[in-house]
Length: 278
Image (cartoon, rainbow, N blue to C red; front, side, top):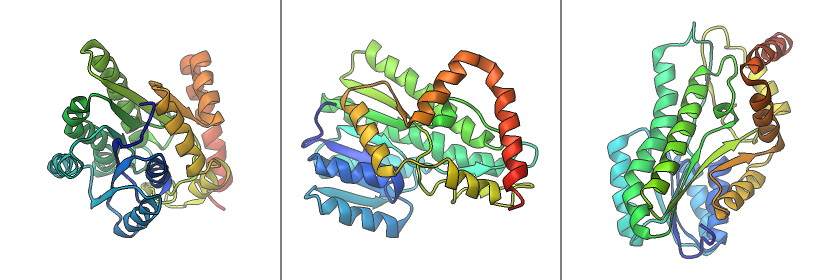
């Protein structure tokens, strides 16, 4: 999608972080923007910011894990604007904890939002996006959809699943000659609230490691990340790596293959010892 002007674009998880910045920048580019989130206050602020760009905005509270609600939302947005050209499936949450100590509900919650939310949004809007004749689907995976980390099994599972789902979808659009481009986004250390808002289980109640992660590794602004994502979408890239950390670690995993796992385990273990008691 080389030009967003007058295109109808949906952004989930728009109440803060990258979702908010994407929505605002899409408005600045002349798009008609539909935004959603579960946070009413944050969503209202995003709506105000997008309207300030002069864009036409549709705002609605939405839990992307609730399939029937997402299906109804797609019909509502399509009726409101007369069609839909693109969706940014951006909503996400995180949970930190070892598989040994996590409960099933912890994994279910992350998968419901981070993976099934992407599937729900894609399936609900895909007919409208195909019908537009100039469509794009943008699904947010993660750096953790390229490599795994101890304590991130639920998040890794969801983000690897998003990557596989999105890459298969991209190939299907090509095979079936649909007028739809597909992009999988892999943000690295973007300074959003996802780490601070992550739930925890087992022996990870001490948030020292999470706070250190947020302070030292989440360095890129959501504003900068949104610019990179939109440029990648405008160039119809199938994969967008956001940040030098994502690019470097992607290359590293390709070079060392499964050997990265032992190194990652040692590094994370060292960080846990250093920061968990702080």
